[in-house]
Amino acid sequence: MSAPDSVPEPTVTTVSAPAGTFVGAEVGATSVWKGIRYAEPPTGPNRWRAPRPAVVPADPVRADAFGPAAPQALTPALDLGEGIRLDEDCLFLNVWSPTAAVSAHASDAVPRPVMVWIHGGAYTFGAASQRVYDGTAMSSFGDVVVVTLNYRLGALGFLDLAEFDLGDEVFDSNLALRDVLLALEWVRDNIGAFGGDARNVTVFGESAGGGIVTALLATPSAEGLFHRAIAESSPASSMYGTERARTVADRFLAEVAVEPAEIGRLRDLSVDTIVAAATRVYDRVPVDEPGTLAWAPVVDGDLLPEHPITVLHQGRGHPVPLIIGTNHDEATLFKFMKSPLMPITSDSITTMMTKLATENPDAVLPSREQLLGAYEGVRQRAIGLGIARDIGFRMPTVWLVEGHSRIAPTYLYRFDWSTPMLRLIGMGAAHATELPYVWGNLDVNPRDFTFRLGGHRVGREISDRFLGWWTSFASSGEPGGEWPPYSNGRASLLIDKRDTIVHDVDATLRKGWGDAVLAFS
Image (cartoon, rainbow, N blue to C red; front, side, top):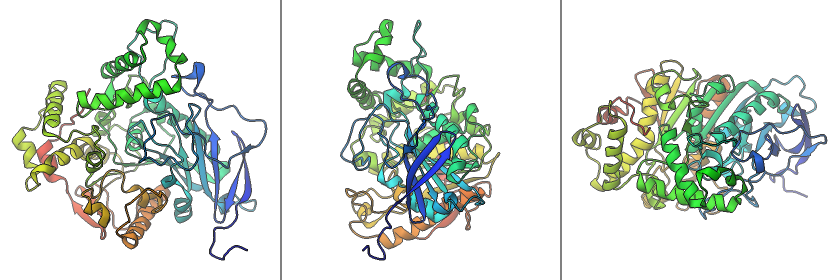
């Protein structure tokens, strides 16, 4: 017999939706369906093509295991989930719902708010199956329906060949964004069967996922597919035009030894060959061009007609309520991992600023003295970390909220809390360290050392606050508590052991960096 406080044994729960009949598991107060196909396999002739909606299966589908993750280079630090394999056929999603919303006796239940998660990973790594993204705690805490999804990564998701003469070959752009849009259409058409309210959908994501969220705010075809948005540590300015995308594509073609005239051969390459080549390009581009990424959304004039950061800075995005913010020490993770993704050294920062000046001839870039004035009092060796953090994350966020707050309620935060262990090793509130608190999953990764020296009690309190803010926002468009919108004197919530509201916390940074958006073309 199970102990009284043990996890209850799952029972079968079945829902019938326009997309098919899905057999999931009911575990206590939460029901979950995993590995639901939302698109046909993007393989063979469908490689580098826009996703096609999944064919409705004739028979009930067992939805009790995650689908494969998108092909990627595996790293020891990345926990994709127990037993998860990689496969090009990766376009699956997962749903957690309050059992009361979908039980046989809940025909009169009020539809729950829906929260759709877009995972991060530099547009190159990650999966919806990562243990930190288990939606049980969030669904239970906030009485919401949680959806997590996979999208194509690296070259398979972001290679852009629009600048090539393709002849009879057809290669679509921004495949990962198109995957997310199709998943949102699936949510719109099917989530009612899972107890969700298709008229109240919040998209939320972190890092690359946050970048996709901010891109969606400026994507015309995304209109009406979501009604609120949360962007955690969005690299909102790290999206590029077709000329830069062509340069990356040239590098990739050289790596796989395919000439532009024989571009159709790309569909014959093995997945391993593509991932290996894409990884080499991913590693090399930020070294040669500091401050840029190899794989990222492309301003293609089609799906993304204009650069999202420009659209949002000018207050022309979709006017939906928004929570957006960054972490106090974003760049330390990249230093800790010896990653070239962020320009931390003096030489790389100088190269980046010179290139930004070249690509933004009409912008007034800050002088060296003006920029360093924003970091007065910062230790000399930490200035590079501050500049990298701010050009990559904080300033794009500030430029964005200055515009979006004019058209919709916008809430700005900065995550400052770090555990004793993270403080000891000098990471602080690094990139992605807020994720366990957001999801209420503080101890799910056996390789995570965050709490080795304590911090659980405060961490749990912070997690409860995060769950409250995020799910309240999904329900009502307001995070609740005493968190005022940014329009109230540039208010920002600083999240720490004790939270504080600070008005114009970024005044010094804004003075140092200026009001003009700085982004690579």
